[in-house]
Structure formats: C-alpha cells, structure tokens
Image 1 (cartoon, helix red, strand yellow):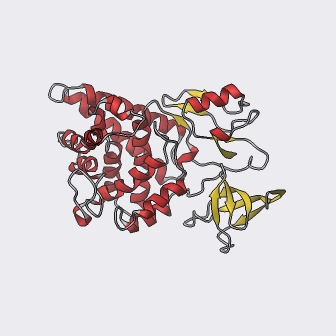
Image 2 (tube, one colour):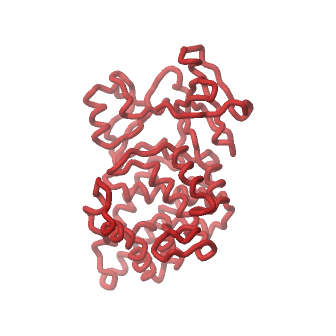
Image 3 (cartoon, rainbow, N blue to C red):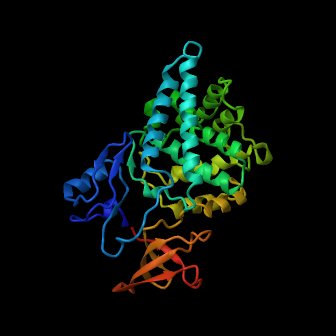
Length: 359
C-alpha cells in the first residue's frame, strides 16, 4: 500500500486501509473506490493522508505500534476520563475519580505490553483515525512515544509505567480551559496564550490531589513545557532542574503536536518534525534523547514515496533497524521516466540519500 496526501488523491483510487472514528466506527471502508464526493468528505473530515492500493506497493506492509482495538479503547478511555475529571467534584466523588485513574493505568499497562512484544520501528502515520478532539489522540500518541523513548533509555519497568501514566494525563489541565480557546483556528493573542499556558499548573494541582497517583505523574503535567535553556513555562527551570520525565515529554509532545493535524494547519511529515527537534537539540531539548528518539521512529514510513539525491523516485519498502533514515526503497522511476522497479538498500549505498517526500 502507498501513502498519499488526501489533497493529491485522484478519482478512481482505491483505499487500502479503513478510516476509523474515535469511537471505533468505520467512517470509510477499505477497498472503496474514491469518487470526487468521497475525496471531498475525507478533506472535510480533516484526513491529511490515506493509504491506497497500487500494483507497485501491494506487498508493502504498514505497521502500527499498537492494535486498532487498543487505540480505540485508549481514546474512549481518555475521553471518558477527561469528561469525568471536568465534571465531578473531587471531595464528593473521590471513589469515581479513583476508578477513572485505575482505568487509565490499565490502558497504559496494555500499551506497554503491546509495545514490549513488538520490535518494529514506531510509525503513527499508519493509524488513520478521525478524532472529534485533538486532545484525545494527542494524549495516546504522546504516551506511545514516551514509552518507546523510555525503553530506548533503558529505564526500569516501574519508571516506564509511571511515565506512561504521566504522559496520558500530561494535558489534563486543558479540560479546565475555555473550549472555544482550544478550538480557535486563528493565531492566539498574547492574552489568550497566557491562558493556555496555565494548563500546566492546573494539571499539576489537580493530579497531585490524588494520594494514589505517584507524585511524578503530576510533575509530567507541570514540566512538559519546560526547556533546557530556561525558556519554557510555567517556572522557567533549566537543565538538571527538569526531571527526566519532563525532558522526555518535552520531545515527544512537540513531535506529535507538529506531526498531527490541527485546526489551524495540516500535519508535518516525520522528517520535518525531527528537524524541529534537532534545531532545538542542546538548547531546548536533551541532545542524547533526541538522538535516541530519531533512532526509534520511522523517519520515512513504509509506503511513502521519496525522491533520492540522484533524481530517482521510489517507495519505502521496509526499515533498517537503527538506520531509519536509510530504509530499503523500491525505485520506480529515474529522471522522471518509469522503469521496471528494483529495490535499493540505502544502508548499503551511502552515496545516495533521500532528499524529499513526494506525497
């Protein structure tokens, strides 16, 4: 299957993967032949990329870090949890709130188990879900990335679980902010941005009120916008003052934010997201963690079309472990001329590099 930008779809293309709602309902079934109406619907739903069938890519396997069933369960759990947190009074309904925390912890445990059983590179572009709220999908994605990075850092199982729980709840403070502010399409005013920034402290104060949650879970909410050079918020702490979890979440939160669809812009591609992290490496983000994160995610996901430095064009077929910027590519054209396809392993041809996506 081949990854294609929705805006570049042509009438007659055939979907290779279904598109799900956050409730697990299939919005558009696989094998559907796209008409002009269907393509418009996908654009209206905010779907930036889809997988389509074509003869050159039918054997390409697209891999997801967690099962579709677990992602659906995770989104529904976090959605239910955030609604419960927002509407319930802590003193009167503490038992219900504690049960909600247990449900979130259970989902995190399932994520860790599935990721532990999988040694494939992580690519969330393989998951095409339409969520009615960016916040829910973002919480799931950040948790997956945080678990993967913590594993690469060889942290203990206890730390990975604690971080996973903190990652799932890192943005909980946003449920206490005005809904219209979170959904605003235009640029925020300085005053509005100051309101948005309060979500870190709101989340910290809320989460630390639970005696059954590890204290560092609340600090995940508190510190995920802090930066190494002290330019972050809410406290402007720097370097060693920032907890390990805060440094991890700073990286994965930014990466998912820029590679996800937002109300005011389309998603960036993974390589573009990583370039933002590298631009801030050593000043905003821990350089060792940025390097490990790059080694843990698919820079060029399976099924994406790329342009090579020698003007050849190809499809990414599979990944090379620890060399995810140098995958195996199926070359399909040379100098804009179609050819009989052949595979080129970029790990063995170091004189050739990928210069651009062609989606």
